[in-house]
Amino acid sequence: LSDWVTSPESPGIVINEERAKATACKCFSYKGKDYCYSPGIIGMLEAGQVPAYCPTKEYEVRPGIKQRFEEFAEAAEAAHKRIEEIPKGERLIPWLTEMGKELRARGIEV
Image (cartoon, rainbow, N blue to C red):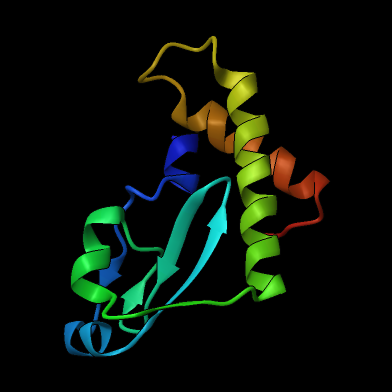
């Protein structure tokens, strides 16, 4: 589950396909991977969505977005370390609990 938070394989939800296909994606890099989002799509695009919905990519470092992503990703990694010993299929509630603790410790409200 923590991989879902930082995975470029988690799909964005297309709400306006025409707009998504016609507008440039905004992208940034984190740990060697590109993460893109597009008007018309909620959330980051998965790698398979990029060819269809990113006619062009604009790499811009918007400190606020990148910082929030990095803080959330770091919290997810820390939370995952605490639940690694729990069998798969039983991790959701413990992971969400640990994720909440990590986010609160970083001053992030969700």
